[in-house]
Length: 237
Image 1 (cartoon, rainbow, N blue to C red):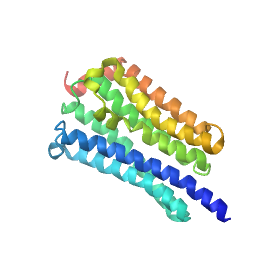
Image 2 (cartoon, rainbow, N blue to C red):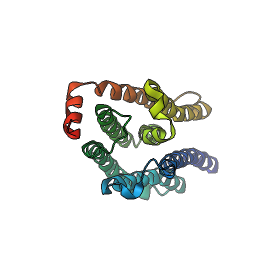
Image 3 (cartoon, rainbow, N blue to C red):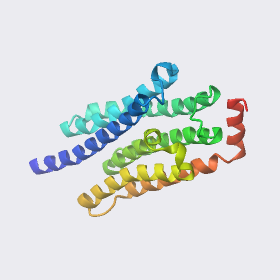
């Protein structure tokens, strides 16, 4: 029993450390962007601060949940899981609203065309929510549940990557660069799978496929007439 518990602890510790790494990366991405003078947090609208608080809460949950599992406090783990589900739904709605409001107020990056920015914010928000929903549905299949939750967070890694990569000068290479940054985290999970399971877990393959499909979908949706028309309406173009 002691060996089994030790093994379970090592598993949870990996997912917690990965969550901590993602949280540090995301926070540093935003902090360095502000310190370099590219953003003024004080001047940001209230909904930008609300979105930031919601994302910090999500990252906090992602770190705390494995710790509760390590301690065997599954009752609290389940309670926080329900809160996390509600928080994820709120993040989806807030992400879509934030994208639309940013276009209406012309607070989006100038190197993004309005249709692309609209497709970017809406698609990533919806895919994040869909992956969390899928993870919750598979909460009794722990291996899949963990990987899908991390996968959902990998999707929302894009804003931090966008603040670290030289997107304005990358042109058509920006999308592949973001995809590679996200897939780098998937590779970490895949390497863990090979080390502990002897093969890459099916859910890890699904996360990789979703990451690639999301980047492609954003580029394609940005060229569709409904998205272009809505972006023009929001920007007053």
